[in-house]
Length: 369
Image (cartoon, rainbow, N blue to C red; front, top):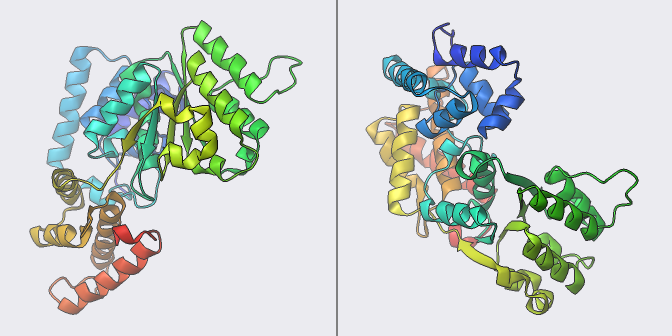
């Protein structure tokens, strides 16, 4: 545990939050960040990226001079620490975790801007890509930045189409209402999509834009409860002002099948396909994470070589390589001398075996092997 200096950014952030009478949850909501991120910053376990600090500054209504002063403080803290806080923190890498902070979302610049641009206009977007390519993180990114990038008039909700509550039209509608912050009127009998329609109309009448993110959209196509009438009604709701952002492994026309071909639901979407990182995106990720983890040039080279597959750089594999390497280094630094022997070829042979075993435990698609 790192002793926090009362003059540090983390201590200051906590004082600012408490002076306003806010909980960490309230600050996280106002800044479009996760509660985990607020806790990490207040405990001085990690320093925020510039984009993240801008969100905190906006939530706290800081003036220009104070923003500049505290951003300079963050920069000074980062340069003065002889050991990296990030390297002592469990949040350097995020293997098989939800996106904790928009500053942790690397690459995908074109896809991000397409999604934000269409959402700003209240249009629908379909995110398509193979398993573990980063679709859920892109949905999380939108949720975390929507307040700052698009404004307070956007009401965004998230749900997973495979969750048990979405096994029927009524269950999906109730989940969607809850995600958007809607509630049945006094004495109202829930009426499935009709109740969702009422909330959409109400939000639009108040100049608010309802945005519903639906992960694992294939869940609808795999259930008999969702028929032509459901998909046609969902399309009609988009015409009333409901912006849909859906994620699926296959294009919507394939997911919905004959119902989608008849209902025309897929016609209101622009498809955004995610692929492995480009070389430039991977280079940026590896360079920044290596600096945070204090990887040596040799370790950074290993990061490159083990992170790349014939198909390219998959973000989840890069996260896994970094996680395993940093774990071994920490074990050695904490007295487990057998954990890390970078000069021994046998060590790297064993490292590769552990990496491939862990990787194949989460990736079944041969295209990413």
